[in-house]
Amino acid sequence: MANNWFIFLIFAVVMKIFTSAQIKELDRFTIENEPIPSIDLMERAAKALTRAITEVWNNAIPVVVFAGPGNNGGDALAVARMLGDQGYQVSVYLFNISGHLAEECAANKRKLTESKHVKDFTEVSQEFDPPRLEKGMLVVDGLFGSGLNKPLAGGFASLVKYINASTADIVSIDVPSGLMTEDNTYNVRANIIKATLTLTLQQPKLSFYFQENQPFIGQLRVLDIRLSQEGINKIEANYTVVEEAEVRSMLLGRDPFSHKGQMGHALLVAGSYGMAGAAILSARACLRSGVGKVTIHTPKKNREILQIAVPEAVLQFDPEETIFSEAVDTEDFQALGIGPGIGQSETTAIPMITQLRRATCPIVADADAINILGSHRAWQQQLPKGIILTPHVKEFDRMEGPSADSYERLTKARHLAERIQGYVIIKGHYTAICMPDGHVVFNSTGNAGMATAGSGDVLTGIITALLARGYHQKEACIVGVYLHGLAGDLAARDLGEESLIAEDIIRYLSRAFKRLKE
Image (tube, rainbow, N blue to C red):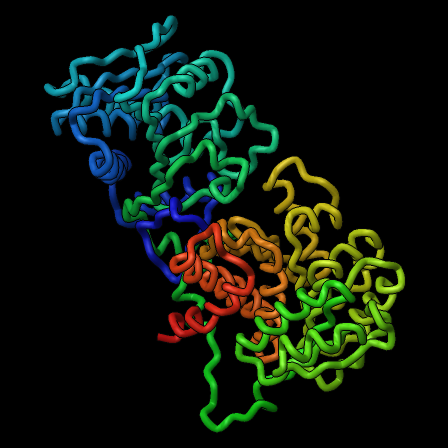
Protein backbone atom coordinates (compact mmCIF):
# COMPACT_ATOMS: atom_id res chain seq x y z
CA MET A 1 0.00 0.00 0.00
CA ALA A 2 1.23 3.44 -0.88
CA ASN A 3 1.82 6.29 1.53
CA ASN A 4 1.71 10.06 1.30
CA TRP A 5 5.47 10.55 1.41
CA PHE A 6 5.89 8.99 -2.04
CA ILE A 7 5.48 12.05 -4.31
CA PHE A 8 5.73 11.59 -8.06
CA LEU A 9 6.67 14.58 -10.16
CA ILE A 10 6.41 12.70 -13.44
CA PHE A 11 3.18 11.25 -14.72
CA ALA A 12 2.64 8.48 -17.23
CA VAL A 13 0.21 5.67 -17.90
CA VAL A 14 2.92 3.19 -16.87
CA MET A 15 5.76 4.05 -14.50
CA LYS A 16 8.74 1.80 -15.17
CA ILE A 17 11.30 0.80 -12.56
CA PHE A 18 14.73 0.30 -14.11
CA THR A 19 17.75 -1.59 -12.82
CA SER A 20 21.03 0.29 -12.32
CA ALA A 21 22.27 -1.11 -15.65
CA GLN A 22 19.12 0.09 -17.40
CA ILE A 23 19.49 3.55 -15.82
CA LYS A 24 22.94 3.83 -17.41
CA GLU A 25 21.47 2.62 -20.70
CA LEU A 26 18.78 5.31 -20.56
CA ASP A 27 21.37 8.00 -19.83
CA ARG A 28 23.41 6.88 -22.86
CA PHE A 29 20.33 6.78 -25.07
CA THR A 30 19.41 10.33 -24.06
CA ILE A 31 22.94 11.62 -24.64
CA GLU A 32 23.13 10.00 -28.09
CA ASN A 33 19.62 10.66 -29.33
CA GLU A 34 18.55 14.04 -27.92
CA PRO A 35 21.47 14.69 -28.48
CA ILE A 36 22.99 16.37 -25.44
CA PRO A 37 26.55 16.32 -24.01
CA SER A 38 26.76 14.33 -20.79
CA ILE A 39 28.01 17.39 -18.87
CA ASP A 40 24.93 19.33 -19.99
CA LEU A 41 22.64 16.48 -18.92
CA MET A 42 24.29 16.58 -15.50
CA GLU A 43 23.71 20.34 -15.39
CA ARG A 44 20.03 19.76 -16.17
CA ALA A 45 19.79 17.24 -13.33
CA ALA A 46 21.58 19.60 -10.94
CA LYS A 47 19.12 22.39 -11.72
CA ALA A 48 16.19 20.10 -10.86
CA LEU A 49 17.92 19.00 -7.65
CA THR A 50 18.76 22.57 -6.64
CA ARG A 51 15.22 23.72 -7.28
CA ALA A 52 13.84 20.91 -5.10
CA ILE A 53 16.27 21.73 -2.28
CA THR A 54 15.49 25.45 -2.32
CA GLU A 55 11.77 24.68 -2.13
CA VAL A 56 12.36 23.09 1.29
CA TRP A 57 15.32 24.99 2.79
CA ASN A 58 16.04 28.70 2.37
CA ASN A 59 19.50 30.24 2.14
CA ALA A 60 19.70 30.93 5.86
CA ILE A 61 20.70 27.31 6.47
CA PRO A 62 24.41 26.35 6.29
CA VAL A 63 25.00 23.59 3.73
CA VAL A 64 27.70 20.89 3.80
CA VAL A 65 28.13 18.92 0.57
CA PHE A 66 29.82 15.50 0.53
CA ALA A 67 30.71 14.48 -3.03
CA GLY A 68 32.09 11.15 -4.19
CA PRO A 69 34.40 10.61 -7.19
CA GLY A 70 31.72 9.43 -9.62
CA ASN A 71 28.75 10.96 -11.40
CA ASN A 72 26.78 11.23 -8.17
CA GLY A 73 29.62 13.39 -6.87
CA GLY A 74 29.48 15.43 -10.08
CA ASP A 75 25.80 16.10 -9.45
CA ALA A 76 26.61 17.16 -5.88
CA LEU A 77 29.37 19.55 -6.99
CA ALA A 78 27.04 21.16 -9.53
CA VAL A 79 24.34 21.53 -6.88
CA ALA A 80 26.88 23.12 -4.50
CA ARG A 81 27.80 25.69 -7.15
CA MET A 82 24.15 26.51 -7.88
CA LEU A 83 23.29 26.85 -4.20
CA GLY A 84 26.25 29.19 -3.77
CA ASP A 85 25.01 31.28 -6.67
CA GLN A 86 21.70 31.65 -4.81
CA GLY A 87 23.32 32.96 -1.65
CA TYR A 88 23.67 29.75 0.37
CA GLN A 89 26.70 29.34 2.63
CA VAL A 90 28.18 26.12 1.20
CA SER A 91 31.09 23.98 2.37
CA VAL A 92 32.17 21.21 -0.04
CA TYR A 93 34.15 18.02 0.56
CA LEU A 94 35.16 16.04 -2.54
CA PHE A 95 36.47 12.54 -1.81
CA ASN A 96 39.16 11.59 -4.33
CA ILE A 97 40.85 8.75 -2.46
CA SER A 98 42.03 6.88 -5.56
CA GLY A 99 43.28 9.98 -7.35
CA HIS A 100 40.78 9.51 -10.18
CA LEU A 101 37.52 11.38 -10.80
CA ALA A 102 34.84 10.59 -13.36
CA GLU A 103 35.04 12.95 -16.32
CA GLU A 104 31.89 14.90 -15.44
CA CYS A 105 32.87 15.02 -11.77
CA ALA A 106 36.25 16.51 -12.70
CA ALA A 107 34.55 19.06 -14.98
CA ASN A 108 32.22 20.16 -12.18
CA LYS A 109 35.15 20.37 -9.79
CA ARG A 110 36.74 22.91 -12.17
CA LYS A 111 33.51 24.88 -12.41
CA LEU A 112 33.14 24.90 -8.64
CA THR A 113 36.68 26.09 -7.95
CA GLU A 114 36.15 28.89 -10.45
CA SER A 115 32.95 29.97 -8.73
CA LYS A 116 33.03 33.25 -6.84
CA HIS A 117 30.31 32.16 -4.41
CA VAL A 118 31.72 28.89 -3.01
CA LYS A 119 35.03 29.45 -1.29
CA ASP A 120 35.04 26.59 1.23
CA PHE A 121 36.18 23.62 -0.87
CA THR A 122 38.25 20.65 0.34
CA GLU A 123 39.46 17.75 -1.79
CA VAL A 124 40.06 14.75 0.44
CA SER A 125 42.74 12.29 -0.68
CA GLN A 126 43.94 10.77 2.59
CA GLU A 127 43.31 12.16 6.05
CA PHE A 128 39.92 13.71 6.72
CA ASP A 129 38.90 15.92 9.60
CA PRO A 130 35.09 15.93 9.43
CA PRO A 131 33.20 19.20 9.86
CA ARG A 132 30.88 19.74 12.75
CA LEU A 133 27.31 18.78 11.83
CA GLU A 134 24.43 19.94 14.00
CA LYS A 135 20.76 20.84 14.06
CA GLY A 136 19.96 23.72 11.74
CA MET A 137 22.42 22.51 9.08
CA LEU A 138 21.82 20.70 5.80
CA VAL A 139 23.97 17.85 4.50
CA VAL A 140 23.86 17.13 0.77
CA ASP A 141 24.76 13.47 0.27
CA GLY A 142 26.37 12.94 -3.13
CA LEU A 143 28.82 10.19 -2.22
CA PHE A 144 27.45 7.24 -4.20
CA GLY A 145 24.43 6.86 -6.47
CA SER A 146 22.62 4.12 -8.35
CA GLY A 147 25.80 2.44 -9.61
CA LEU A 148 26.83 1.09 -6.20
CA ASN A 149 27.14 -2.71 -6.22
CA LYS A 150 28.74 -3.58 -2.86
CA PRO A 151 28.41 -2.45 0.76
CA LEU A 152 30.35 0.61 1.86
CA ALA A 153 33.42 -0.08 4.00
CA GLY A 154 36.41 1.67 5.52
CA GLY A 155 36.46 5.44 5.58
CA PHE A 156 33.22 5.85 3.65
CA ALA A 157 31.39 3.61 6.12
CA SER A 158 32.78 5.70 8.98
CA LEU A 159 31.68 8.91 7.25
CA VAL A 160 28.14 7.57 6.78
CA LYS A 161 27.92 6.66 10.46
CA TYR A 162 29.21 10.12 11.40
CA ILE A 163 26.59 11.83 9.21
CA ASN A 164 23.79 9.62 10.55
CA ALA A 165 24.78 10.36 14.13
CA SER A 166 24.36 14.10 13.57
CA THR A 167 21.15 16.08 14.05
CA ALA A 168 21.50 17.82 10.68
CA ASP A 169 18.93 17.38 7.91
CA ILE A 170 20.18 15.15 5.10
CA VAL A 171 19.17 15.30 1.45
CA SER A 172 20.41 12.42 -0.72
CA ILE A 173 20.94 12.74 -4.46
CA ASP A 174 19.24 9.94 -6.43
CA VAL A 175 19.85 7.18 -3.83
CA PRO A 176 20.96 7.39 -0.18
CA SER A 177 24.66 6.52 -0.27
CA GLY A 178 25.21 2.88 0.62
CA LEU A 179 21.77 1.72 -0.55
CA MET A 180 21.79 -0.38 -3.70
CA THR A 181 19.04 0.06 -6.24
CA GLU A 182 17.80 -3.53 -6.19
CA ASP A 183 19.18 -6.22 -3.90
CA ASN A 184 20.27 -5.21 -0.39
CA THR A 185 20.01 -8.68 1.11
CA TYR A 186 23.68 -8.76 2.05
CA ASN A 187 24.17 -5.03 2.57
CA VAL A 188 25.51 -3.57 5.83
CA ARG A 189 22.59 -1.50 7.01
CA ALA A 190 24.65 0.53 9.50
CA ASN A 191 26.64 1.86 6.51
CA ILE A 192 23.70 3.43 4.65
CA ILE A 193 22.78 7.11 4.82
CA LYS A 194 19.49 7.81 6.60
CA ALA A 195 18.15 10.67 4.50
CA THR A 196 15.57 13.23 5.54
CA LEU A 197 14.72 13.65 1.86
CA THR A 198 15.75 11.59 -1.17
CA LEU A 199 15.64 13.31 -4.55
CA THR A 200 15.74 10.52 -7.09
CA LEU A 201 16.17 11.18 -10.80
CA GLN A 202 13.53 10.34 -13.42
CA GLN A 203 12.47 6.88 -12.16
CA PRO A 204 11.91 5.35 -8.70
CA LYS A 205 14.30 2.55 -7.78
CA LEU A 206 13.19 -0.98 -6.91
CA SER A 207 14.68 -0.88 -3.41
CA PHE A 208 12.43 2.09 -2.58
CA TYR A 209 9.41 -0.25 -2.53
CA PHE A 210 10.68 -2.46 0.30
CA GLN A 211 9.64 -1.90 3.90
CA GLU A 212 13.06 -2.41 5.48
CA ASN A 213 14.60 0.35 3.31
CA GLN A 214 12.20 3.12 4.32
CA PRO A 215 14.35 4.42 7.24
CA PHE A 216 17.07 5.30 4.72
CA ILE A 217 14.87 7.04 2.16
CA GLY A 218 12.88 9.45 4.33
CA GLN A 219 10.60 11.58 2.21
CA LEU A 220 10.92 10.79 -1.48
CA ARG A 221 10.55 12.95 -4.57
CA VAL A 222 11.01 11.71 -8.12
CA LEU A 223 12.40 14.53 -10.28
CA ASP A 224 11.82 14.76 -14.01
CA ILE A 225 15.17 15.55 -15.67
CA ARG A 226 13.72 14.97 -19.15
CA LEU A 227 15.51 11.76 -20.03
CA SER A 228 14.45 10.45 -23.43
CA GLN A 229 10.84 9.31 -23.48
CA GLU A 230 11.68 7.24 -26.54
CA GLY A 231 14.39 5.53 -24.53
CA ILE A 232 12.02 4.93 -21.62
CA ASN A 233 9.51 3.37 -24.01
CA LYS A 234 12.13 1.16 -25.67
CA ILE A 235 13.71 -0.28 -22.54
CA GLU A 236 11.79 -3.32 -21.26
CA ALA A 237 11.29 -3.21 -17.50
CA ASN A 238 10.49 -6.22 -15.32
CA TYR A 239 8.93 -3.90 -12.74
CA THR A 240 6.31 -1.19 -13.19
CA VAL A 241 4.03 0.91 -10.99
CA VAL A 242 0.34 1.05 -11.87
CA GLU A 243 -1.08 4.54 -12.37
CA GLU A 244 -4.69 5.71 -12.46
CA ALA A 245 -4.75 6.27 -16.22
CA GLU A 246 -3.74 2.65 -16.83
CA VAL A 247 -6.49 1.35 -14.54
CA ARG A 248 -9.06 3.64 -16.13
CA SER A 249 -8.17 2.27 -19.57
CA MET A 250 -8.86 -1.29 -18.36
CA LEU A 251 -12.38 -0.69 -16.99
CA LEU A 252 -15.22 -2.54 -18.68
CA GLY A 253 -18.42 -0.66 -19.43
CA ARG A 254 -21.98 -1.75 -18.61
CA ASP A 255 -24.44 -2.21 -21.44
CA PRO A 256 -27.58 -0.17 -20.62
CA PHE A 257 -29.70 -3.16 -21.71
CA SER A 258 -27.79 -5.79 -19.76
CA HIS A 259 -29.37 -7.91 -17.00
CA LYS A 260 -27.90 -9.65 -13.96
CA GLY A 261 -27.33 -12.88 -15.88
CA GLN A 262 -24.94 -11.04 -18.19
CA MET A 263 -22.96 -9.40 -15.37
CA GLY A 264 -21.44 -12.64 -14.11
CA HIS A 265 -22.17 -15.13 -11.35
CA ALA A 266 -19.49 -15.46 -8.66
CA LEU A 267 -19.09 -18.32 -6.20
CA LEU A 268 -17.46 -17.70 -2.81
CA VAL A 269 -16.41 -20.67 -0.67
CA ALA A 270 -15.99 -18.91 2.65
CA GLY A 271 -16.66 -18.87 6.37
CA SER A 272 -16.43 -21.81 8.74
CA TYR A 273 -18.70 -21.58 11.78
CA GLY A 274 -17.42 -18.72 13.94
CA MET A 275 -15.76 -17.09 10.91
CA ALA A 276 -18.88 -16.00 9.06
CA GLY A 277 -17.54 -12.44 9.04
CA ALA A 278 -14.97 -13.40 6.39
CA ALA A 279 -17.78 -14.65 4.14
CA ILE A 280 -19.83 -11.50 4.78
CA LEU A 281 -17.00 -9.12 3.94
CA SER A 282 -15.91 -10.94 0.79
CA ALA A 283 -19.51 -11.25 -0.42
CA ARG A 284 -20.37 -7.60 0.22
CA ALA A 285 -17.19 -6.50 -1.56
CA CYS A 286 -18.01 -8.81 -4.45
CA LEU A 287 -21.50 -7.37 -4.80
CA ARG A 288 -20.14 -3.80 -4.61
CA SER A 289 -17.72 -4.55 -7.45
CA GLY A 290 -20.29 -4.91 -10.21
CA VAL A 291 -21.03 -8.64 -10.38
CA GLY A 292 -24.55 -9.73 -11.31
CA LYS A 293 -24.99 -12.51 -8.73
CA VAL A 294 -23.07 -13.95 -5.80
CA THR A 295 -23.50 -17.41 -4.30
CA ILE A 296 -21.86 -18.20 -0.96
CA HIS A 297 -21.03 -21.82 -0.18
CA THR A 298 -20.78 -22.04 3.60
CA PRO A 299 -21.52 -24.40 6.53
CA LYS A 300 -25.14 -24.79 7.59
CA LYS A 301 -24.68 -23.01 10.92
CA ASN A 302 -23.91 -19.75 9.09
CA ARG A 303 -27.41 -19.69 7.59
CA GLU A 304 -29.09 -17.02 9.71
CA ILE A 305 -26.22 -14.56 10.01
CA LEU A 306 -25.49 -14.62 6.26
CA GLN A 307 -29.13 -14.31 5.23
CA ILE A 308 -29.46 -11.27 7.46
CA ALA A 309 -26.04 -9.68 6.70
CA VAL A 310 -25.99 -10.26 2.92
CA PRO A 311 -29.60 -10.58 1.71
CA GLU A 312 -28.52 -10.02 -1.90
CA ALA A 313 -26.46 -13.24 -1.94
CA VAL A 314 -27.67 -16.75 -2.74
CA LEU A 315 -26.71 -19.25 -0.02
CA GLN A 316 -25.50 -22.76 -0.81
CA PHE A 317 -24.92 -24.93 2.25
CA ASP A 318 -22.19 -27.46 2.84
CA PRO A 319 -23.30 -30.88 4.12
CA GLU A 320 -21.35 -30.21 7.32
CA GLU A 321 -22.68 -27.96 10.06
CA THR A 322 -19.47 -26.04 10.83
CA ILE A 323 -16.83 -26.53 8.11
CA PHE A 324 -16.28 -26.71 4.36
CA SER A 325 -16.19 -30.42 3.52
CA GLU A 326 -17.27 -30.95 -0.07
CA ALA A 327 -16.13 -29.46 -3.40
CA VAL A 328 -18.77 -27.64 -5.44
CA ASP A 329 -19.64 -27.93 -9.14
CA THR A 330 -18.59 -24.62 -10.76
CA GLU A 331 -20.25 -25.16 -14.15
CA ASP A 332 -22.74 -22.33 -13.59
CA PHE A 333 -20.23 -19.82 -12.25
CA GLN A 334 -17.87 -17.41 -13.99
CA ALA A 335 -15.42 -17.07 -11.07
CA LEU A 336 -14.54 -18.75 -7.78
CA GLY A 337 -13.15 -17.11 -4.65
CA ILE A 338 -12.06 -19.58 -1.99
CA GLY A 339 -10.37 -19.39 1.39
CA PRO A 340 -11.67 -16.57 3.63
CA GLY A 341 -12.42 -18.07 7.02
CA ILE A 342 -12.70 -21.72 5.88
CA GLY A 343 -10.24 -23.04 8.46
CA GLN A 344 -7.25 -25.34 8.00
CA SER A 345 -8.39 -28.72 9.27
CA GLU A 346 -7.48 -31.77 7.20
CA THR A 347 -11.21 -32.37 6.67
CA THR A 348 -11.29 -29.02 4.85
CA ALA A 349 -7.88 -29.32 3.18
CA ILE A 350 -8.80 -32.28 0.95
CA PRO A 351 -12.00 -30.73 -0.50
CA MET A 352 -10.15 -27.43 -0.89
CA ILE A 353 -7.50 -28.86 -3.25
CA THR A 354 -10.22 -30.92 -4.95
CA GLN A 355 -12.16 -27.70 -5.50
CA LEU A 356 -9.13 -26.02 -7.06
CA ARG A 357 -8.44 -28.98 -9.36
CA ARG A 358 -12.04 -29.35 -10.54
CA ALA A 359 -12.95 -25.68 -11.01
CA THR A 360 -13.88 -24.77 -14.57
CA CYS A 361 -13.69 -21.01 -14.01
CA PRO A 362 -10.99 -18.50 -12.94
CA ILE A 363 -10.00 -18.77 -9.27
CA VAL A 364 -8.91 -16.47 -6.45
CA ALA A 365 -7.36 -18.37 -3.51
CA ASP A 366 -6.83 -16.44 -0.30
CA ALA A 367 -6.33 -16.79 3.45
CA ASP A 368 -6.88 -20.34 4.69
CA ALA A 369 -6.69 -21.74 1.15
CA ILE A 370 -3.12 -20.38 1.02
CA ASN A 371 -2.34 -21.62 4.52
CA ILE A 372 -3.46 -25.11 3.48
CA LEU A 373 -1.20 -24.94 0.41
CA GLY A 374 1.62 -23.90 2.74
CA SER A 375 1.24 -27.08 4.79
CA HIS A 376 0.82 -29.25 1.65
CA ARG A 377 3.51 -27.82 -0.62
CA ALA A 378 3.37 -30.75 -3.05
CA TRP A 379 -0.14 -29.62 -3.97
CA GLN A 380 1.29 -26.61 -5.79
CA GLN A 381 1.83 -28.92 -8.76
CA GLN A 382 -1.94 -29.41 -8.97
CA LEU A 383 -2.86 -25.72 -9.13
CA PRO A 384 -4.67 -24.77 -12.35
CA LYS A 385 -3.01 -22.30 -14.71
CA GLY A 386 -4.15 -18.73 -14.23
CA ILE A 387 -4.97 -19.12 -10.53
CA ILE A 388 -4.66 -15.94 -8.45
CA LEU A 389 -3.05 -16.31 -5.01
CA THR A 390 -3.35 -13.34 -2.63
CA PRO A 391 -1.10 -13.98 0.40
CA HIS A 392 0.10 -11.45 2.91
CA VAL A 393 3.78 -11.70 3.88
CA LYS A 394 3.40 -14.33 6.62
CA GLU A 395 1.11 -16.49 4.50
CA PHE A 396 3.60 -16.37 1.64
CA ASP A 397 6.48 -17.30 3.94
CA ARG A 398 4.50 -20.34 5.08
CA MET A 399 4.24 -21.39 1.44
CA GLU A 400 7.79 -20.67 0.27
CA GLY A 401 9.84 -20.48 3.46
CA PRO A 402 11.19 -17.44 5.35
CA SER A 403 13.04 -14.72 3.44
CA ALA A 404 15.89 -12.52 4.65
CA ASP A 405 14.26 -9.41 3.20
CA SER A 406 11.60 -8.12 0.81
CA TYR A 407 13.80 -8.49 -2.27
CA GLU A 408 14.35 -12.18 -1.61
CA ARG A 409 10.63 -12.65 -0.95
CA LEU A 410 9.69 -10.86 -4.16
CA THR A 411 12.15 -12.98 -6.12
CA LYS A 412 10.53 -16.12 -4.69
CA ALA A 413 7.07 -14.78 -5.56
CA ARG A 414 8.16 -14.10 -9.16
CA HIS A 415 9.51 -17.64 -9.46
CA LEU A 416 6.33 -19.10 -7.95
CA ALA A 417 4.12 -17.20 -10.41
CA GLU A 418 6.26 -18.43 -13.31
CA ARG A 419 6.34 -22.00 -11.98
CA ILE A 420 2.57 -22.36 -11.52
CA GLN A 421 1.77 -20.04 -14.45
CA GLY A 422 -0.49 -18.03 -12.21
CA TYR A 423 -0.63 -14.71 -10.39
CA VAL A 424 0.83 -14.11 -6.94
CA ILE A 425 -0.25 -10.94 -5.15
CA ILE A 426 1.97 -10.11 -2.17
CA LYS A 427 -0.16 -7.79 -0.05
CA GLY A 428 1.56 -4.99 1.81
CA HIS A 429 2.59 -1.34 1.80
CA TYR A 430 3.22 -1.54 -1.94
CA THR A 431 1.22 -4.58 -2.99
CA ALA A 432 3.18 -6.48 -5.66
CA ILE A 433 1.39 -8.38 -8.42
CA CYS A 434 3.67 -11.09 -9.84
CA MET A 435 2.68 -12.26 -13.33
CA PRO A 436 3.27 -15.65 -14.96
CA ASP A 437 5.70 -14.02 -17.43
CA GLY A 438 7.95 -12.74 -14.62
CA HIS A 439 6.70 -9.15 -14.71
CA VAL A 440 5.86 -7.40 -11.41
CA VAL A 441 3.38 -4.54 -11.00
CA PHE A 442 3.46 -2.47 -7.81
CA ASN A 443 0.26 -0.81 -6.65
CA SER A 444 0.24 2.93 -5.94
CA THR A 445 -2.89 3.25 -3.79
CA GLY A 446 -3.67 2.42 -0.17
CA ASN A 447 -2.64 3.53 3.30
CA ALA A 448 -1.64 2.24 6.73
CA GLY A 449 -5.26 2.31 7.95
CA MET A 450 -5.94 -0.69 5.72
CA ALA A 451 -3.76 -2.85 7.97
CA THR A 452 -6.90 -4.15 9.65
CA ALA A 453 -8.69 -7.49 9.97
CA GLY A 454 -10.87 -8.34 6.98
CA SER A 455 -9.10 -6.11 4.48
CA GLY A 456 -7.82 -9.18 2.61
CA ASP A 457 -11.31 -10.71 2.50
CA VAL A 458 -12.52 -7.54 0.83
CA LEU A 459 -9.79 -7.80 -1.83
CA THR A 460 -10.78 -11.41 -2.54
CA GLY A 461 -14.37 -10.33 -3.12
CA ILE A 462 -13.35 -7.49 -5.44
CA ILE A 463 -11.09 -9.59 -7.65
CA THR A 464 -13.58 -12.46 -7.77
CA ALA A 465 -16.29 -10.04 -8.93
CA LEU A 466 -14.07 -8.62 -11.67
CA LEU A 467 -13.25 -12.10 -12.94
CA ALA A 468 -16.95 -12.97 -13.04
CA ARG A 469 -17.63 -9.72 -14.91
CA GLY A 470 -15.28 -10.86 -17.68
CA TYR A 471 -11.95 -9.27 -16.81
CA HIS A 472 -8.86 -11.32 -17.71
CA GLN A 473 -6.83 -12.40 -14.68
CA LYS A 474 -4.12 -9.79 -15.31
CA GLU A 475 -6.59 -6.92 -15.51
CA ALA A 476 -8.65 -8.26 -12.60
CA CYS A 477 -5.54 -8.26 -10.41
CA ILE A 478 -4.40 -4.76 -11.39
CA VAL A 479 -7.85 -3.13 -11.30
CA GLY A 480 -8.87 -5.01 -8.16
CA VAL A 481 -5.79 -4.11 -6.13
CA TYR A 482 -5.93 -0.48 -7.28
CA LEU A 483 -9.65 -0.16 -6.46
CA HIS A 484 -9.12 -1.75 -3.07
CA GLY A 485 -6.40 0.76 -2.20
CA LEU A 486 -8.28 3.71 -3.70
CA ALA A 487 -11.40 2.91 -1.68
CA GLY A 488 -9.20 2.75 1.40
CA ASP A 489 -7.65 6.12 0.57
CA LEU A 490 -11.05 7.75 0.08
CA ALA A 491 -12.27 6.24 3.35
CA ALA A 492 -9.16 7.39 5.23
CA ARG A 493 -9.60 10.91 3.88
CA ASP A 494 -13.01 11.11 5.58
CA LEU A 495 -12.53 8.85 8.58
CA GLY A 496 -8.80 8.91 9.29
CA GLU A 497 -6.43 5.95 9.20
CA GLU A 498 -6.78 4.97 12.85
CA SER A 499 -10.54 4.34 12.66
CA LEU A 500 -10.58 2.58 9.29
CA ILE A 501 -12.14 -0.91 9.24
CA ALA A 502 -12.70 -3.38 6.41
CA GLU A 503 -16.38 -2.49 6.10
CA ASP A 504 -15.35 1.11 5.33
CA ILE A 505 -13.35 -0.07 2.31
CA ILE A 506 -16.51 -1.76 0.99
CA ARG A 507 -18.63 1.34 1.62
CA TYR A 508 -16.19 3.50 -0.33
CA LEU A 509 -15.89 1.16 -3.31
CA SER A 510 -18.70 3.02 -5.05
CA ARG A 511 -16.76 6.29 -4.76
CA ALA A 512 -13.63 4.59 -6.07
CA PHE A 513 -15.48 3.30 -9.15
CA LYS A 514 -17.11 6.67 -9.64
CA ARG A 515 -13.76 8.48 -9.53
CA LEU A 516 -12.23 6.16 -12.10
CA LYS A 517 -15.21 6.34 -14.44
CA GLU A 518 -15.43 10.12 -14.25
